[in-house]
Length: 247
Image (cartoon, rainbow, N blue to C red; front, top):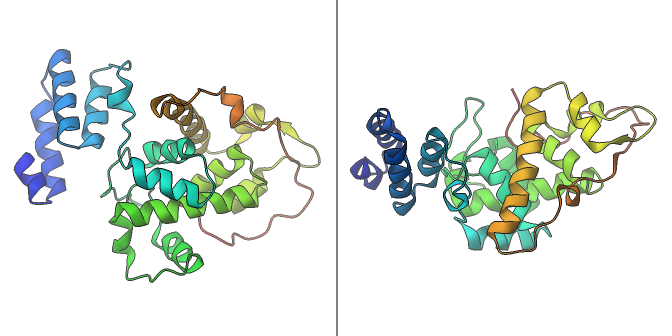
């Protein structure tokens, strides 16, 4: 498996790993997860420790990989790096070569249309969609997209996170009519279970990453505005794609 990794044949490497761990005991799975982490294969470490049912090792489950680019690109977009880590952990679990059935690519699972749009916004040259497999470029465009969602939804983290997953047009249509609604109640009205689970996971992970980064840990309400604003305007067509395409 390690030789396939050295040859950048990650599909074959992953298949070898899955075959190697399928009959391991729980202690052996934990040892394998540590080995994957030592080899800088955080995605496999996360998956393996989950299979072992071991939830207490936060260093394994929530690594601080790509720390410098995460902090840098969060700063460039005036974002909390903990929320950027939450998105990254939920989207790809640190697999820079992740490729979804919908065509989303890389660490933050960006669709090529979204990546190209952010490249134009940032005045970057766009060579091809393969640039999204570059961790630094992917983080740059993912941070820019999330910052744009925050601006669109008045810095409401719940709405911006929902828009990252499902698209801003859908989120606008899901807003309550006429009056505001508590954020936790609004989340339960979202018709897509994937998006409901996605918001909860990203915000919970962000709290964990506050701890992992050695910061004072906020309550979850830090990311939950008191209420979702009411929607008194007709929904507009999407001006930007969702980042990762909710299918």
